[in-house]
Length: 508
Image (tube, rainbow, N blue to C red; front, top):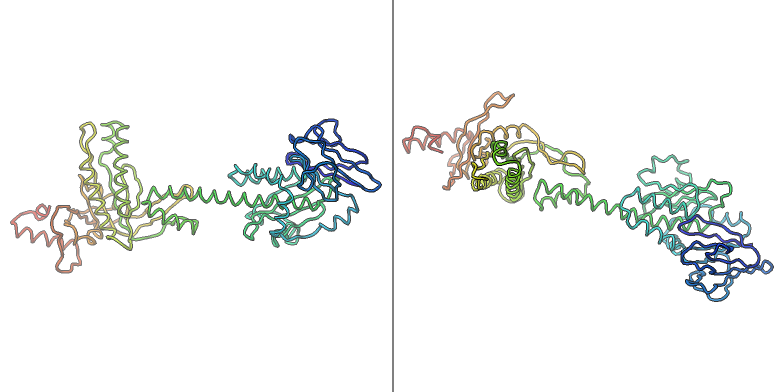
């Protein structure tokens, strides 16, 4: 006896026993074997079975799109053999000679290694299903949708009751029968495990399992899994692996672009590229850690008053221009940026080349001051006034939050001190902390600028002002350990030389 197993990507498999005599195949309702396929003719082909010589033949009835047996287009009669494959459009009919089912089933039950040859064999045997899977998955860009599409297609095409795709990260969460269960062996040995009613196929990439396809039949009338079923599952596994790899690559590209855009908010494009490469290697942005840094804080004085005078729209444009320029000059000097209210906080760290962080911060402060002085007051209002404060010391620097919503930040008393100093640096002045002043005192003219008291501090904190008068830089002839005393000594010398009564005013 013979049977035909009819498969189509859009319907469950159907098994038909071949009866003696002629069986008409086509789209007509009166056909013995109805093919719901747009490529099938109304009267497409005819099968003839003579049971005495066990002769099974097929004849194409001059159909529009032809009848194919084992991929060859037929004309006239052709004798069919066991395991032949008939194709009409996207409908495939597997020819099976019914023999001892138990013996046949014994041959396919067990373990087969998931090899390249097995994949090629499966792909070669099921091109139509693969085409259907590819068409469904081409536009899928997330794993959940891909799993859903593959699950539906495999379940329908193979007529199974259970189809699960288990991702590698969920292997430990899945309650399996144990390491020696079919699923456990398939994962551990990268093998295909097949039994009459269960089939486990790994989804492989680069020699490692990305997932596991678990298939099960639990209906009493269900036919046992056959070699064709295993091949179909392997073909689906191969396409699933390609899809998961593509989605993973797209996700990496998306995250790379997302992280790069995030970094460009805080650092220059060149430094962003360097940080991005580190992120791609480690999967993490630099976390908060204590570092020696030089910070610069600049803020627009009376920003709310200016906004009221010129209106929100003009003030927004005015503020945008200020931020854009300040950010550009900070990036040009290798600094990082964080926007704070109506001001900007820049962070400078040691670099292998170029000036020190303190000098770079002072250069930025000078450029911002000069830019602000040159701004044309909107609607003939008073010009924009800022104050700049620069300090050097220890602070917590890094990125906080999640990878998708990370923010560059800097914490510590150093920041509180710098923002307080900035309040005194008006109009358009640059104030320095003692450490910053000491680092650049031989390159710029610097003078004491009083002190301020910080909450919790027992003694006042000295401040210094840097002057950008075009003159030869003052060079200290003798080493000084007390920077404030050195500046007082310079002032006293100037007082005697010029006969002035106020050394501080004279230095100014």
